[in-house]
Length: 291
Image (cartoon, rainbow, N blue to C red; front, side, top):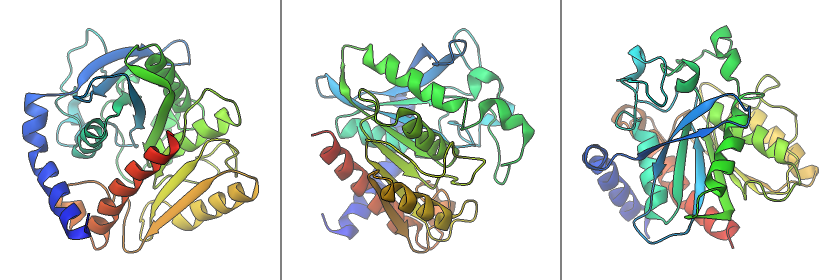
């Protein structure tokens, strides 16, 4: 499809998201983290076609899964808890991607790592050193949530158990890289990972190289104001030299959160083209990886 038509289609999808969210919010589900003590809440975007389906787990960034317009007064989210943060207040980006994957025949699961731990309000920009983030960190805590999510999906009869993928943004992108490091060359894990503008420093990653048998694709903004695309490129280069399959796309003029569909973020030079390309490329990659 020509790029200008892709932009029109995506624009129409984004414009309809509030209506779609109001009429058909994703299903709320509950499952355990692999830490064996945290009861997680997740949001499930289900395809309209008959299953079983391949699946993808989506890992939110440091802002959490909910809209900034709604999460300021949120603390705990979970079974039996009334909260302003729920399936109807997810951020536009998460709804966009969840609907995108379900339209492409994937069951998409968005786990909330923060709400079950009393931090549904999330964390603002440039809060990398906030000590309040320690017990939801991307190195030792959130990878266990991703492992709990894949176990939950494998227990569902409507999921193809050997075709489950991972996607993460920012802090969730770093988490995804750590999940792949923990997975290593073991079979039966995530089939591949899509990683958007992760932090790649020593404080974010378990190791300076990602050693994994599954493919990984990084999507980076050349003008990222929060994390270093150059550092992630070096991590990817070292990982490839170690034998891992890591593809890197760097978008000129794109910033952090370049795929956030808000008019403010999309007004930044380079973000619209980056989002358009990333949507198409992500679907193409999963199509290849699942065969």
